[in-house]
Structures are given as C-alpha cells and as structure tokens.
Length: 140
Ligand code: RB5
Image 1 (cartoon, protein in one colour):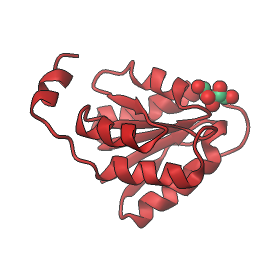
Image 2 (tube, helix red, strand yellow):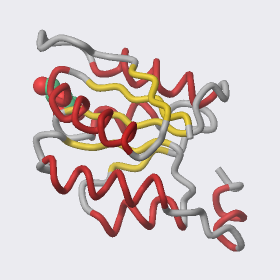
Image 3 (cartoon, helix red, strand yellow):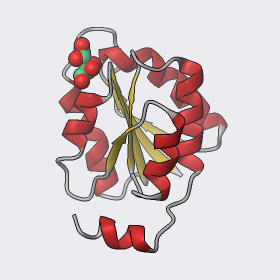
Image 4 (cartoon, helix red, strand yellow):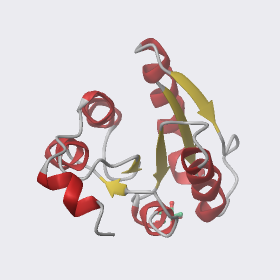
C-alpha cells in the first residue's frame, strides 16, 4: 500500500523509525517532512499528508507530533479524512475495524518507539469490518 507520512519537530525521530518499518513491511512511503529538528508548524504537514489521501495518491496517512492531538484536529477538518489519535493498540485496531480510519495520528512524546511500531503494524493490517459501521461512517 502507498502511505503518506508527516510530522513536526516533535515527531521527527519516530517518523524515521516508522518509515523504515513500513518499508520493511513492503509498503511504499511518501515522506512529506519535516526533515530537520527546527521548530515547525504541524498544520503544514497535516495538510500535505491529508491532501495525498484525499486525492488518492496515497491510500492512508500517518501523522506524528508531540501528542498527536494537533495533527488529529487538523486532519479531521478535511473532507473524506477519518483521522484517529491512537496512542495504544486497542484504539488503533478499532479505528480501522469500526471507523475505517484513513489517517493515524501518533504522539511521539506519549508512546515509545516499540509501542508505536506495534500500533502502526496493527493499524496498517487491520481491515474495516463494514456492515453497520459503513452506515455510521456514511453519516458524517
Ligand atoms: C510542539 O511543541 C507540539 O505542540 C506539537 O508537537 C503537538 O504536540 C501539538 O499538538
């Protein structure tokens, strides 16, 4: 699958690890930055990733900031984007199974790299269950 990824300065270290993980899993990753440790504004990167998911260039997106909160607030303002802030495994699985989340938001200052990797593995591999959940996501 083609996955767009972006972060602010708070998520840059974790982004690098997740890009490697996703590539090892066989995915194609489009890295929209940031690429340096200087302070940047997370909305710029959320917009770049969400645009790629909206226009179909990428099937899914992953956004990382300090908490994941800012990224998720921005991402959910885009039509067609269903972003879930998932800093633990259960929510990551459910955000796919029940909500068909197409953007995953992570807090690099909340989760360690090991947990983040498990969250990404679960989120990327869990299928949407459809059925009554399809009706619900069609309501917004
Ligand atoms: C940056 O310091 C921090 O505010 C940002 O990474 C994020 O946590 C915002 O939601």
